[in-house]
Structures are given as C-alpha cells and as structure tokens.
Length: 172
Image (cartoon, rainbow, N blue to C red; front, side, top):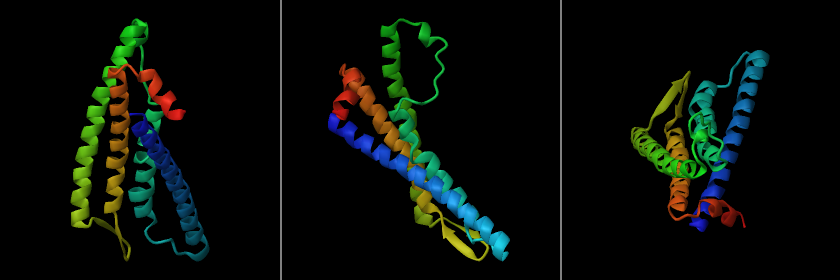
C-alpha cells in the first residue's frame, strides 16, 4: 500500500505541475493575443477555444487530487469538532469511502463522455480554424480518478489501522 501511495503522490505532483503549466500557458497565450490584436490588428486564432477547452480545464481538474493529498479541501466542522476524537476519527475514515464513491462515479461518467467525444472527434470552429477539443475531456476523469485512488488508499489505511503511518512511511 505504501508503494501505491508513493506512486499516487508522484502522479499527483505531476498533475499539479501540469496545472501550473496550463496557467502559465494561458497567461502567455492571452497576453500574445492582446498584443497581436493591438499591435497588428490581428488576434491569434483559437485563443478562446484554447483557453476554455484546454488551459482552464487542465488547470482546474488535473491537479484536483492535490488538495486531497494535502488535506486542504474545504470542510465545515460545526458539529464534528464537538464530537469525541475517536468518533471524529471513525467519521473521517468512513467519509473517505463516501467521497471516494462520489469521485469514482464522477471519474467513470466523465471517462464515458470523454470516450464519446474522442469517437466523435469533438472539435470547435473558431473563425477559419477547427480545433480538436476531445483530448481536454480526459482531464476530469484523470483528476477525479486520481483523487478516488487517494481516497481509496486512505480508506484502506483507516480499515487496517494504518491511517497515521501511511503518509509517513511513504515519505521515508
């Protein structure tokens, strides 16, 4: 389980780096588009499509598992913080399963849609350009699938009583 956690951690880091690259590329692309529009009166073709179908999607969904890995998702603990520590621990453990089921369903459904888009060769026409957008459809199943894997590993660690040691063993 530690090896799988280590691999998932590395893939999560790679996804986070890809998300950062997408943000940088979006910034550069939009900046060059604005410069081209104002200096040469000719915007870059496909900017809107690239920003909405690639950069934003990749920046949002590929690093989705990063927040789970860092335990940085938003949580409201109005009631649970008042519960005994032992009960909080068990509640958190079972929430890994519940959340994993939701993200697993999201990964499965979005993968189905991505496969359909790939078979159809989904594309967008912007001006005289036709830009294939189907590859971007795989960002959501990738991010949600990776998050599901992390949650499944955390749930397995909870069930085996290794919740505290999973991440420390992987780091060592």
